[in-house]
Length: 66
Image (cartoon, rainbow, N blue to C red; front, side, top):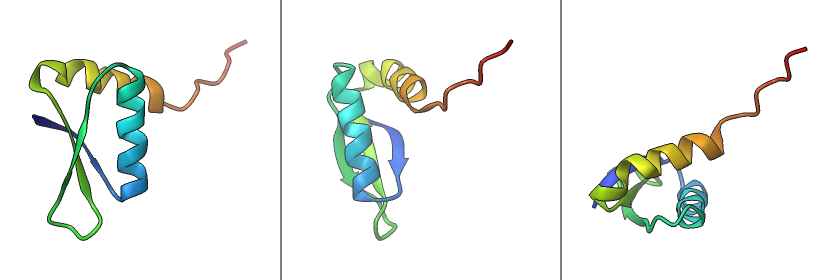
């Protein structure tokens, strides 16, 4: 398992885990040295797909161009 993201708290970590699950990628959460931070871990072979899923689903909508 490799780290794909670092969440600032449990809520954010669980949201990322759900987002990855929706993309068909299993993810595990691991405690970080910081009090509330959690590492979001995915299988190494899913790393690029996980990065793409997080990026695609967390980007703000682009404003429409006239």
